[in-house]
Length: 179
Image 1: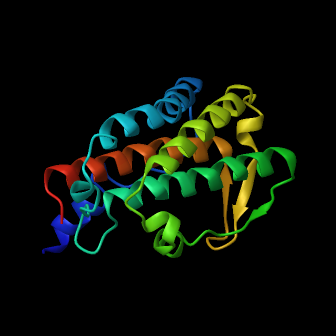
Image 2: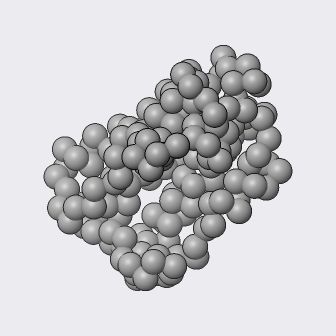
């Protein structure tokens, strides 16, 4: 497989574009994406048979089921990072090694219902939390220990709105033409 095609399979909507300024409209749109992701994901994956859930979105990539579990794991981390950033002064956040997490039994199972339920409940809490943040709160940040980089909450919200779309496209690609 050529490197250009592999890159397109890895980043079907492109890589996240890091900006330093986001409007209130940008943040509202991102919040809406966070709010809608669990329902959109469930509508997409719930009717899929196990044979399709075991398809990969690219060679040596995760299965559709692993992507669903990854979304639950990743978004749990993000939700907690938001809370730490709001309640602490620029905390250093523990890294999460997503590849190792995706290989654990609960994240490599073809059973996805528990991760779909988790995402639904998590996003309800996360949205309630986010809707009550002030513009000043969105400027609070945390330090990512592995990247040694500061992540303002407005940027983090945009990252996770992108993250959901990114993986929804992985799943759609795997449904159409799995590996």
